[in-house]
Length: 450
Image (cartoon, rainbow, N blue to C red; front, side):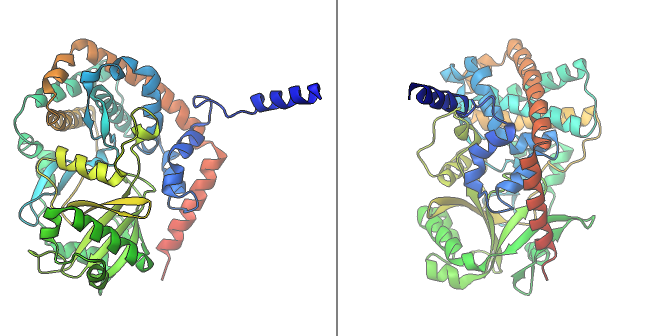
């Protein structure tokens, strides 16, 4: 009997779950985020898994859980400094940075951070490190070689741009008014009808959106069976927001259901802010008081931020969409044209205007090291301006020392080494390949739908 007990204990210990560091990178991210996205929906977790296996950059923006887990053991000095912890947008993807429809006249544009899906309170140094890693991976993806001197210049440019913006009283739109890249993003003046014509036909959504090259960019799956869900979310959002209630002609579930022309599940195939998260496009009949035509609203599922999921910060007591919406309202300057959040059962969604004007820096061609430095100036400036609004700019400025710049470079080197190793393991993982096949089949089926 004792031998059997000993063998049983031995097997329990031998087969106990591996530590987080020992688990396959694929499994670590799946355990962290998979359940929120829907592991059985081929365009849920399998799509995010597919994105992770495509390139080191897509692995980085789709698997942020690994970065924050790394910070827990490699950035203890930052985490232990309470004065460095401020509200951060937390999203390393350039898809979160660009122009957006701002509050005020319909069609007015502003520039800055436009997505707060991963917002959280954390050391500002972690966010600056995210920016440095992002820039280096973009350079790598576009085959721009950065030697040691080039990396030093990039890190120095990012740090100086960030520090300079901390003391500016301007918002990002006016701060970058003379920047040619930003000016181009803000120059969009298409009528809203362009958005309706691109995404709908005879009052119904199209099944796919292609780019100028003919390649699919978005998949739109019919979701009229979700009209009760989206009407409930919108009614909840309107009830919780006086500004939104003033903008909307509709307020109740019945009114919103009757005013809904069509609903689709939207899947962005490239540069998605949160791959695999649910997104609904809702075509509403003349929903805005000041606008005499149909409008499309975007509802995006929110889940706990990557830093929360990785245990770097405590879980926010608010629903994820409330956290993202509230942080957007406090960190966006000016605010968005439409901003709100609502719940449906155990899920929560942010609500925003879907428009033809907003654009991001994510797809811009970066062809040489000067372009990478240009991006560093923009990323550093926007992040500095955003962090300034926390009211802790003096504490941050006191920590923006040459020593911090050196530490940022060293930690970026160390993390990138780990990231490339994790990417190689993930891209060759049979489970990731199975996910990719599942996602591709679902995309093909949606694209070929009559």
